Every structure is written in C-alpha cells, then in structure tokens.
Amino acid sequence: MTRDEILKLEHYLKKTFRLPAIQVRQRPQKEDSAEVYIGEEFIGVLFRDDEDEGETAYQFQMAILDYDLQN
Image 1 (tube, one colour):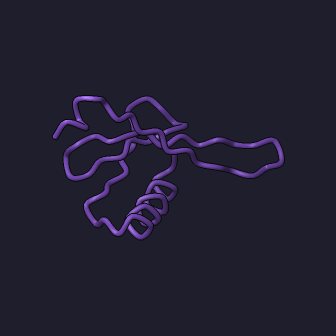
Image 2 (cartoon, rainbow, N blue to C red):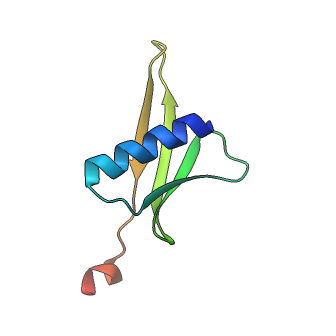
C-alpha cells in the first residue's frame, strides 16, 4: 500500500471507531496489506483487493483469542 492509502485508511478508522490511538503501519516486504495497531498493540491486518472492474476494496481482519475474552 502507498503511504497515501495508509494515511487515508488510518483517518477513516480513527473517525469510524472514534479512536484516535489507531495506527495503520506499512508491513515490511508486503505491498498489498498494512498492520493495524491501537497504541503499540497489534490488532489486525488491512488487505487491499484490486477488483476486476477497476475498483479497490479494503478488508480488515482481526483475530480474537479466547483468553482475551476472559479479562
């Protein structure tokens, strides 16, 4: 992802979730995705999907582990 895409996605997530601590960071050696953090805690990955009709979509994938639910 380009730096411009990352900044736009970060702004969108901050606004949507009303959470200024969200950060979107470029992944080393990956051009189709970026990592999402709250502060320094990794929470998921954003993937870019270049669709056939020339449109671009983004998917956010977040795993929630069972021990995280016990807190």
